[in-house]
Length: 425
Image (cartoon, rainbow, N blue to C red; front, side, top):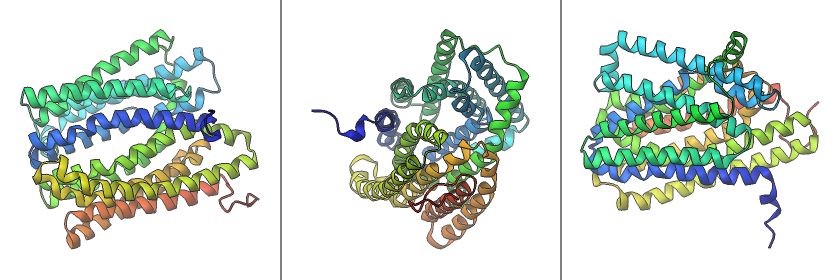
């Protein structure tokens, strides 16, 4: 029997492949939650969460989001010219990593206080992030080629090694949260080296950069860095506020609820990875009937996000007592608001892509500041009124505002028939 028409379309085939691969990739470290909650105290889990948040910060600043330029250039230039951009991006990542190490060494005491850990771990996370950024070059190129199977298998392989090392170091060696961070670092180094070998095999070398390519990569990526940092702050401020206002143990509970709510995020990210090449291809044709189809698909996607929130919230209430240590049961109260926040983030992805298509990423900066301020203000107010759950409520409120504001701005620079009629004049 032939497959339904919808699954013959490349978009949905790729979206399905990305979703399955990302599900497996996320499921592996996700399965560590029951293990870690039995071998780590809430305080230890809190330290782990803060260090992982620091890694996600470095992922943004090491490279200035310049890897995204490869998505745009892949369809317009030849492979021999593409290597100049790959080399330029590698130079940016290397240089910013060196600066990060210098800054870390000059602010040793401040960093130890922030991480609640020895300075050694700060050096280690810079190294891990450097190799993670190298891997992202390869992954972006595979995304541009629309080969989700390679993309997914690479990430699944890294997650598998990551989890395997973490289990060995946490359970058998007994190194606690330190073992988990070492597992992350070692897997990042291994797959970063693998990425270099694969790129070199495809004649995409790292030592052929030209300054004009470096400049173009910076001009493309740098304007979106404040926005990315705002998004990072939007997702992290709750953890920091809970840690500072309540304590590191409470931040451990918040982190567990946050990770469960992120199920919505990885589904949204999976679809967006397939959606972006499809969307850019359709927008380049500038066909009105295609735009109507895009809008209809977008609205269907919005409704699916609400369904996901309800499903994840209901499932967590049932699964927490089964899989988690009793001292972590209270983390379930965060899941609804965190998953709602990521649903709004998924909707944001669907409207922000028009800004990237028009290469007006500098506009995202005008969204970052008000959203971050709203999150901080709402979170502080809600934490004082409702306790630690206020951090998740503040996240949901700011994510909704981010989605609405981005939708308005994107429609200003690229008109779409959101009313399902010809309103493009």
